[in-house]
Length: 105
Image (tube, rainbow, N blue to C red; front, side, top):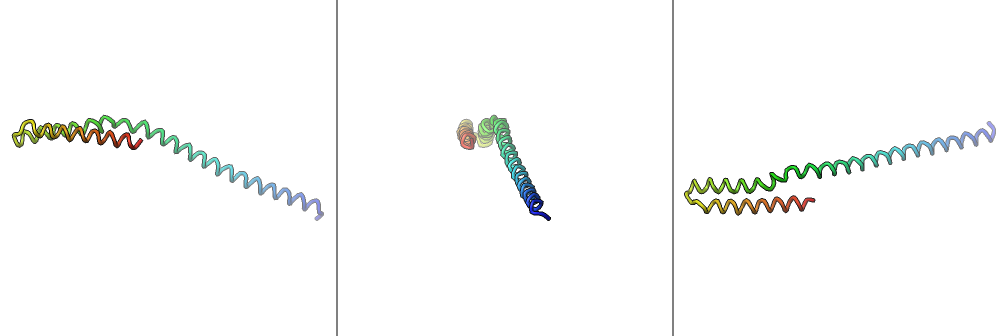
């Protein structure tokens, strides 16, 4: 083998290795970018679905408090006491749920 043929094969081998390394790095970067885009899309989707339950979070404690108060008033014959207590607890539960909802965002 002559010196020129060895040099050409060494140069082509080095270029080949560089090309392979570039390809691997590009694929890794593409995978990383795709992962970031998927995470961003996932976070955007969660934001819109999170507010579908806001009515349940705000109204349910009030209804539970009122109906529990009415039931206990009938059971113990103490007409307005348990209703007001249930209403007070329901309002407190509603504000607590509202605080948790706004705190998480």
